Image (tube, rainbow, N blue to C red):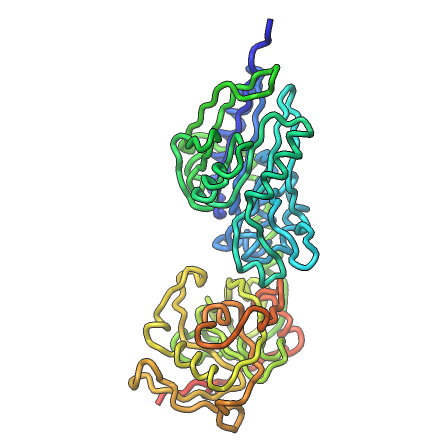
Length: 477
């Protein structure tokens, strides 16, 4: 007589975005469910579909996500897909650091170096899991983004890759093919329609809370919302003879807050203490108070522009004030001071622009409505005035709002509209302002994976104590 089918339960989260206050409760629920499933003869896995990290949390930002991975280790995660929080925020180069910290695989089959075509270090493209009689093939996929080109990396469309890997896994004995995806719901549905071999897609990125899985081309497609408010659950009844799915059931479980996992509470506290040690590290000294002002020249803005100009070896530099968060007091500067001063993960960049292009950029950046904008990547800060180095800019805040610039000097000489100048900025400015220049892909050199606080730290190591006196680099008429 045929044996009873085996139950495979997959618990899943996505887009936690460093809401670590939810982790002790998620962990308690997951461990209780897993214990119950195993006691009944089944198998259970815990997956995350990306963006568990987020620089909104200091511990996550300072460690570039490894603190979150360490907490997830204690929770017993079996696999995770990388999201933009770890790959785009700090660069794909950070994936290897995250993989070393994690006891579970970080899965992405479509993230490769542009020059070599090799998978980015730290990424695991697929797994073949033998869970008793169950043979499960798992393929990892992360979101597409043209911004990866900044780092010399390309994210490929998933369907051809998943098709090839599904075939490979099936030939290796897998009877069930699952995709752990950080593509977003629409892309997940398109992937299910494109690849017939897929049985299950556990997704993230678009923050969709699906009370029940969708069925697309025979594949179950699910996602568990965001911020750890829900724990997703998929129960698959597997035929022991064929290894195929007989029945399936999916649900979205509100995270219960009546029971917390004490091990996770301890793990969180340990990471908080470790980060506090890092924050106390001495990095330099300032002889003057470095203030922040989003709408006029400020000392910390002058310093940051000087940092970019020196680091990238250019004649001039500009950077939005919105990259700054807090002032730095006079005296010793710690790593924590730098983290509080700027949480921006923008990368220093270098290019060449004509004087005419520079004026266009300054006119755009000095428009009142542009200065007041609060783009998402600036995390609530106004974009603010462009802070500059190597320039003296006179502008009329009450004149023509489209062309407020009155005069621009490079050193003591008038800006030559026809001449080409070497310019330092970040990927934010040069990415946002390409419509005001003739920049093409390849015209910009990026210092990656360096982020702004690291660039400032390097400058302080060379120039401490720094002393910034406002020089009238930005002068309103």
